[in-house]
Amino acid sequence: MLVVIAFGDSVTSVRGDRYPVEYELRADDYWRVTMPNGMRFDTSGLALDEGGRLLTVHDRNPEVWHIQPSKTDGSLESHVAGVSMLTNCFTPLQLRPFAHEKIDRYDTEGLGVDSQGRLYSCEEANRWILRFDPSRGVVERLPIDWSTVRRYFSSDANASFEGVAVGDDQRLYVANERNSARIFVVDLRTFEIIDHFAVSPRGSGFGFLHYSDLCWHRGFLYVLCRHQYVILKVDPSTHRVLAEYHYKKLEKLPEHRYQSRYPTGIMEGLAVDDQNFWLLTDNNCETRKQDPKDRRPTLFRCLRPDTLGTTR
Image 1: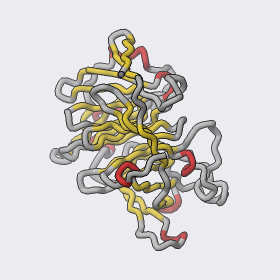
Image 2: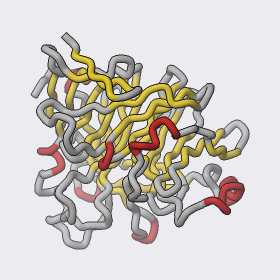
Image 3: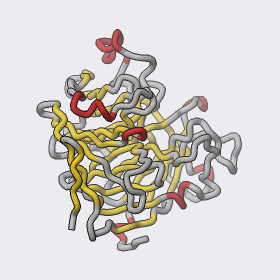
């Protein structure tokens, strides 16, 4: 049985007598993401492009960065990922048409890729969705009318859009974080809001939610919930949670645990492929407890337990 609850003009589905399968994630590999000259790098969002490159964004500027993990051989020195900036997208010249409307810096919080190789980023301060088309070399700001969901917008400019994913169904999924956690669905042909909903892990109800990234893979939406340390696999048509992938043990391992000023998790990047979950920290320049000098973010590769037949 699937129970459906209506909220105004939206519909949110919750579980009936069928519960999602639960899995435990472990780190099958990891890398400390190292910027040139040791510069600060607050990663936020993760995506795999059509060529298999791992891409991320920095919440202090609009550019896209390519993460290049090293081949690991078991030594600490091998667990390092270099980073290089893509110089052809979200450049100052491409963004110049929007400069007069920009509030503060570009606080980029999420990244998505569609089947045509176009890159989508969500910007927090202005609540913009930007799209880079490599075939034309231009950036456009999508003309989305948010009026039907504006009641979910917080007055806190730092509690805004936090993740974005593009479905094969010509739909854009945008995560609205914390204060009024919600996933907005945009028809990319009309730029209209056609759906919005909330999903939550089993046992947490619809209390405090913190969606920190989204990913689309093979017809399903994956939702990163940093407060509950879990990834949700969601059927986008019914909003039903099909599986939960828990990673709290991974994040709290002594060798990976960061100092933190907030009582919540620090994962802000999620990418999914056929074999792996990729998770990326935004540790806000806090250091790891085992190394008070190391402020680098960490990229994790977790083999998908659902393909291995192992449950929690």
